[in-house]
Amino acid sequence: MTRLNLPDHPFNIKKEGEKTLIFDVFRKRFVVLTPEEHVRQYFLAYLLNYKNYQRGLIAVETEIKINNLSRRCDAVVYNKKGEPVMILEFKAPEIKISQKTMDQICNYNLKLNVTYFVISNGLQHFCGKIEKSNNTFKFLSDIPDMNTIVK
Image 1: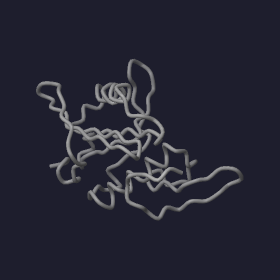
Image 2 (image 1 turned 90 degrees about the horizontal axis):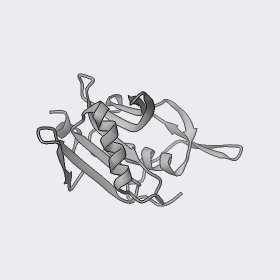
Image 3 (image 1 turned 180 degrees about the vertical axis):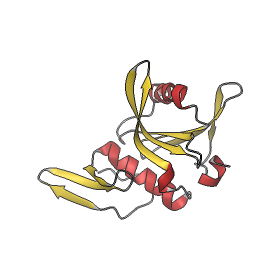
Image 4 (image 1 turned 90 degrees about the vertical axis):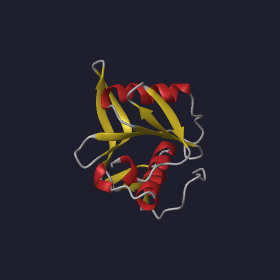
């Protein structure tokens, strides 16, 4: 796997035949370690270990309906009231983050109405805060601590 621009973390990884699996602490099971899953696991470990996010407030592969079509958000962070506050979208390291990725987040946000978003391919990370009053956003220089996004 590609070396990511994220801190190392000791994951539970195993082989089953030709497949490499990683234990997902959010879904509480082993999942196939694809390049995108590699980014998701490292990024979420970063949030837990360095940004004080709580595992119980993060949902992985959250299903939403947009125009009667099922979509899955890579991860969503909720506040203690169960309201979504952040959408996270992960791409494999070889995938360039583009306008198409931003459009994907915007479409998801039509349903979730969050204040923050994160897009990462493991090498580049973008975080933004959405100003709901005028439907604009600004990029942030760093990923906010959990206490900042749920105050």
